[in-house]
Structure formats: structure tokens, C-alpha cells
Amino acid sequence: MNKTKVKICGIQGVEVLKSINKLPIDYIGFVFAKSRRQVSPQAAASMIGMLQQWERDSFPRSAGVFVNPDMNQLEDVMSHARLDVIQLHGQESPEFCRDVKERFDVEVFKVISVGSKCGTDGTSAALEEYAGIIDALLLDTFEPHYGGGSGATFAWDKIPSYQEWTRNQGIPLFVAGGLDSSNVGGLIRDYNPDGVDISSGVETNGTKDLNKIAAFVERVKLA
Image 1 (cartoon, rainbow, N blue to C red):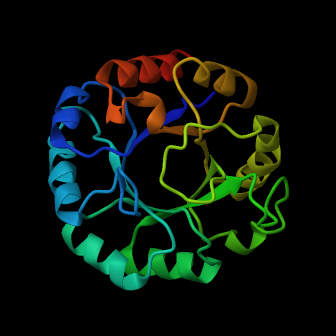
Image 2: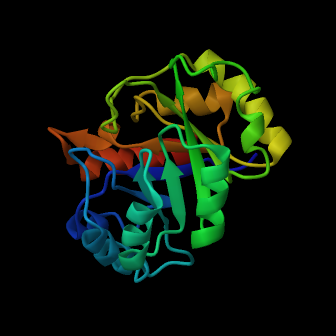
């Protein structure tokens, strides 16, 4: 069984990174969409530089979170912060995803908001257009005004239909939305996603909590 990958999203400062550099974290996410966790390209560049200094076999990969960006925004961010992954949370078309991959030579993670009225709930029909284009699918809880880290879960019984599609495509499935150290073990036990993505679930009063991050990572790796 593959070990579930861990993605910690919404990191805003180097001090947090200094404190978690011994933890087996696979991805660090930086939010460039409008959000209370939004960071500048310059700040992200500084943090990515710190990731690359972590003394371990492989440092975490960097992911940038965007909602319906245009190429100019992506050009601006990528000119400062060389991301490994561009994660798209909006209504980005398959053609746009392909253009992003080709222009920036990055992996593209496409996010599906489960519970939205976009026709993607529980079906693979709408995903077929993304076949052979995206590098991972990420399921998150639908919220009409995306700010990242809503803290709400979606109906996990919808996961298998998406999981069947990703397995047929040979790409990983990540799950986000309302995760924390108390429920992630059950998610992994029942659905075995390839990765989990967390933001608000490792915060206290809107700030990343080092103890909660450590507890979450430990729970994932033990599961």
C-alpha cells in the first residue's frame, strides 16, 4: 500500500517552515488567490528557498494555489517563485490547464469542489476532458466564496467514483476539506486516498499551530 502523501497548505512565513523541517511533509502549499492566507510571490520565493535547504533526502515540493488566474498572474508569480505544482481551484478549462503545463513546465493539480452544481458530482463525464492533461485531482469542499480552508468536510462516500477515474488515468487523488488529526485516520482507513491536503485543520485562531501540524502528520503516517 502506498504511503499517503501530506500537503500542508496556507504557509505564510519562514518561522513555521523552520519549525517543521524534520517532519515527513511531501508538499507545502502557498496561496496566491484572494484569501487571508494569501502571500506575495516574493514571500513565496523566500520560503521555497528555505525548503530547498532542508537537510533530508528530498525536500517538500512547492505548490501554488490559484483560482481562475490569467497567464499574466501566473507569469508574475513564476518569475519570482519557481513552483513545482500549480493547483487550480476555479473553473479552469482543460485547454488552460494544458497551456499552463506547457508554458511553465509544472505539474497541474485540478481541484473539484464536491457539492457544487457544476455537474461533476459523482461522475467522471466532466473529468474526461482533463484526461491526459492534469497530474492529480484534488477533492475539496464546495464553498461559494473560496478563501481556502473552510474547515468543512464533504460527503466522503463520493470519493470512490472520482478515485476510479484517477486510477484509470494513473494519477493521484488528494482529499482536502475539513481534515484534522481526529478524522484523517478514518479517511485513510476507509478510502485510502493518495494524498491529503490540510490548512485550517492545523491552525489555532487562524495561525498555523506546530503541535497540530505534527499531530496530523503523525496520524497520517501511522494510518
